Image 1 (cartoon, rainbow, N blue to C red):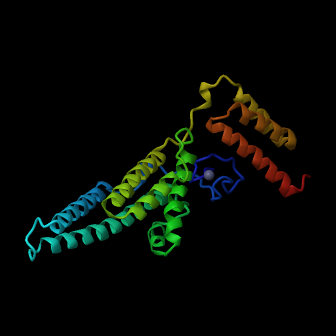
Image 2 (image 1 turned 45 degrees about the horizontal axis):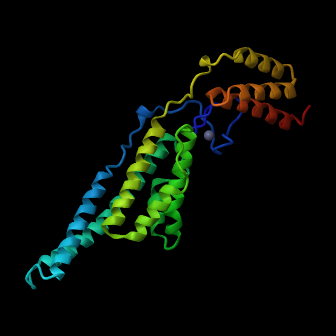
Length: 262
Ligand SMILES: [Zn+2]
């Protein structure tokens, strides 16, 4: 059994991942089967450039560079408005797309749906919290899959908030740059290999220890089995099977709880 969110392996009998709180699945989905493609965030810089140009034209007009009455100022204002509006909606589309990938990669277990990710930006005041909240959820997802390349919780969200408050071309540039970063990290996490380094590279007789623990479990020496699984987990720290051993210990504990220790 596997967790579709963090990909930890669990022995039979356990039905949810205690880290992610999601139901386990029999097989993990391969990344090749993903149908959502990453958003083209560079388009955001086109909106940024249009906004910047419109702003420059506007300033030049105000300084008397163009004859009054020419449509230049009007066009600049329209350009600025469309770039701001288009940039904002395009950003929400990108946020939705990133969440589509997350939902697909976790077999529908990712806690934030694409629709919710976009729509919550329209709730006054709550949206100030939301722009920090959803990137944090992404960071937690990335950190579970790529524990060796952790993302800082809070930083991307704080930058998005700064971008939103800055407004204008600079604001758009900040937001889309954070978007490029988030999208890249999500892609890396989604494509991360299922297994951590194999225990084959370790010179620990864990195989024997595993069979010994399973034997103890079958004989009903549950406390001893738990202790052994935990020792294996300690020896294998940082390896895929450490999680597996921990999960085995947990399975035995659940058995004890179910049978009331009998
Ligand atoms: Zn999990």
